[in-house]
Amino acid sequence: MTVTPLAAHAADRPAPAFRGRIGRDARSGHYAVPGRYRLHLSTACPGGLRIAVAHSLLGLDTVCPATYLPAVPDCPEGGHSVLRPLYEASAHRYPGPAIAPVLSDDWSGRIVSTHAPDIMRDLDRRFGGDRPSLYPCGAESEIEAVERMCAQGIEQAAQRAGSVGGAPVELDRALGMLLETLGALERWLGGRTYLIRDEITAADVELWVALVQLDTVHRNHLDASAVQRIADHPTLWAYARRLAAHPAFGGHLDLDGIERRHHARCQGLEAAGAAVQILDWAVHAAR
Image 1: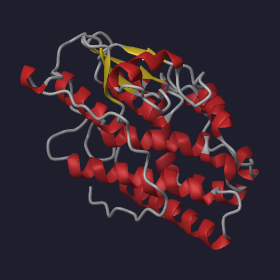
Image 2: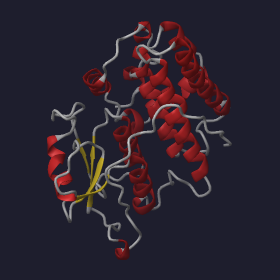
Image 3: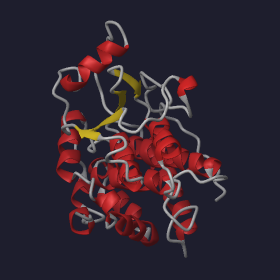
Image 4: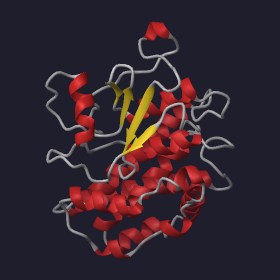
């Protein structure tokens, strides 16, 4: 898949606090041992949902257990109190919120990483075993291009298009970028089951979560006409519906949690698009 990255005008995703990696052997410090590591996830947030889907696709429930956290953090600064000991053990007087996702080391009681893309890659490469890889050989550049498209062309563009008080020309430009990205993906998926291989890869995980967020979160701040134009990509939304029926995808879809997290964090006003749901996720999601 050849993709031209879209330019981003909004800020990139916040830099993670911890970016340790799981290596191949004991010389790397953090090395792959079944049962040593634990995930702490909230599937109401995009990063947590991506990791949860990848974790299920790889079948790692016993190899790297996952603890699921509430959709809305319980600390005033936006963190989870249950994660505070891990953060404080990992960084003396850590000043920020104790947020998920987290990959922790049960041996040391410290955090390995809070960076979702690194965590997904390490789960796949160090614990994937004989299962089909989510990052198959030769596909890394294509997967990274899809990650950029989802972050910049869908998530950031949708946020800007629904910004309260934004200049009309900026809102139109952001909506144009969003529709351009969706159109490119619509054309690419024509005649295909998955994005870049004949089986599910990390690119499909990235895109599916971006589409979930687009329809369950960003849609609330767009007008009805914009949402109808977004919905006018039948191949793309059929693809999202098909993946939702897969247990590893739909089984982690916490619609109520996503809604509660959105209302707890969002400072904007709902627009007419809030009433124009694109997919009935509750019907299509596997349970």
